[in-house]
Amino acid sequence: MSEAGFLADTHVLIWHVTGDPRLQAHHKALIDGQVPIFISSVSVLEVGIKRSTGKLTTPDTMFNDFAEAGLIALPVSWRHAAAVEQLPQIHRDPFDRILIAQALTEGLTLMTSDQAILKYDVASV
Image (tube, rainbow, N blue to C red; front, side):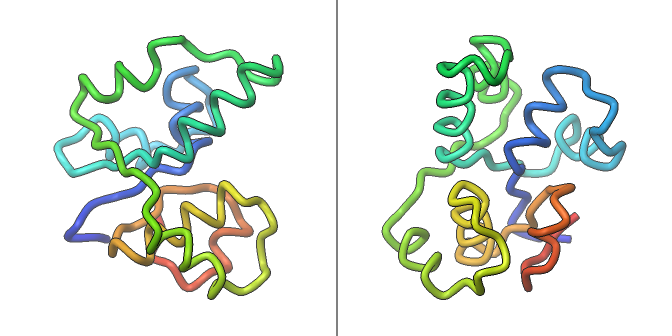
């Protein structure tokens, strides 16, 4: 587990706000707890794209609600973007690749249920 905190994968956030039973109990406990949880700006982008195309329904206030609950915004930096190039081609999803790069660059533990992400050498729960 991370001293620095946790970076929530987009699906973990979506499952949390929609009450999806796929949300693992330890992910819910972390989000509802007192540990630092980061949300990538790429997750906001991914949710926005999926909502605008009708592929996803979540509350419009989803990210504001997370911010009010104390979750921390993590912008995508040049360092994060450059780190994507060094990742093995295990996962082709560009959103997930940025999340992996952010977690590695920032020393965060990635909260995910994505089996492809778990193949990377990144701390995860």
